[in-house]
Image 1 (cartoon, one colour):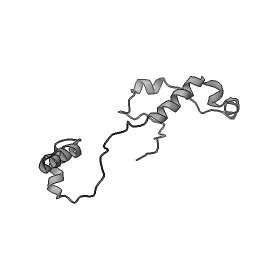
Image 2: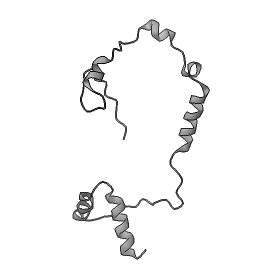
Image 3: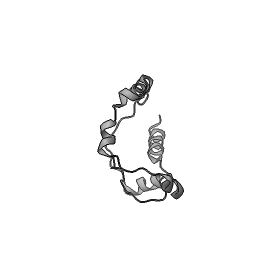
Image 4: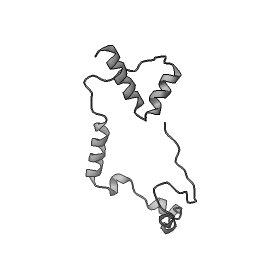
Length: 104
């Protein structure tokens, strides 16, 4: 799920920077003249930047020989809650429990 960036103009703690960092930044909005002087990224950044960017886009997730299969399964709420209480990788633990129960 994609969220819109927060365009707040006031300091908000807990976002990876300190109040001191926030206060040290002075970035006024660009003027029309400054916008007019801007150049496309391809004119100012080295070609190697775009090559590495293209490689990163191609990389993606590694291919899995036997990818997991999505299924719809009705499970009692108390069972799901029990797995969820054990931590964030509850789905993997549930999969392992099903694997053991099936004798695999």
